Length: 331
Image (cartoon, rainbow, N blue to C red; front, side, top):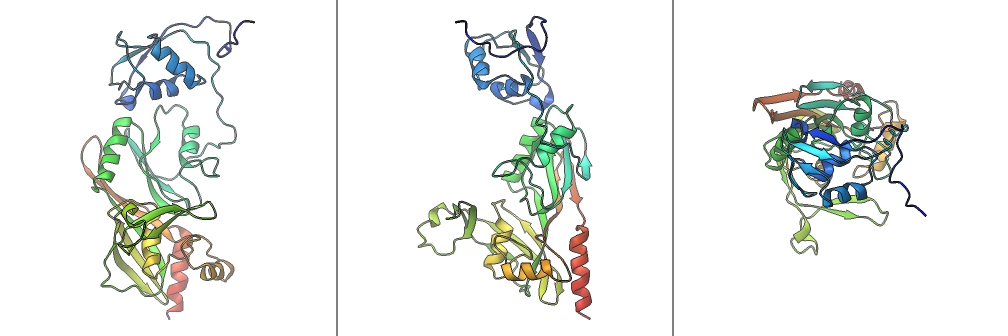
């Protein structure tokens, strides 16, 4: 019995050798990842096989799966008959409010309740919807992440060089990320720095959690990562404090756990907050049923020009309405 074909062709036209030119968006990318993106519908086993066999060439020379590409490289791809994998119809095309965009990156104002990417029970997020809305875009990748419940500024790279440059800035703590957080109680003005290590773990419910580690005798103390948040009171309200929190490290759930650890949970936080207080706000006259954490300011050096950019996203309407109601209660 003849072997089953690797893939079927949409037409009877013979497959031909392809010469792919590497653009700036793929500069520095691994060959296997480049081919996975370019050869839509090709199984990974096929991609690795044609690389190992020497049928794939970079600038006429043999190469390996982990070979790094440079702008202007010519990648030879042997004749392949492939059926292009159709776009997932369950992912809707969606654009998000644009705060900044050029040839290198996009900064959007993400709404609360929208995941940044699919996974962990979420079918799709910002990046999948944006890719569906911009099928002509050759490269769109998240530079960093925001929790699903958090709104605000989110960076998306349009070129691989921009992605690596911006992620390097984040890693070196050279990027200023400031969040607006409404917390329960009166924050102490002198408490300006929260420097408490954080530990990720899986709870008995199978969920990912984070906890503060303050005891050096804790059996997991050596696994906790140093985490630093700078806190400033933006406004004192009756029973609440509106804070500006600038993170110097980017740990999972960092602000949420740090503020809760200090005895001031974020309003509406479903994981580390006050469940009864959250329910009262959601069911009461104010009808506030989201987490009040908003990435309001982002400062970074542009990956191509080096210019310092400072971007802002105003508080969402529901957050502004809650603040207005709390201010009225002060009178």
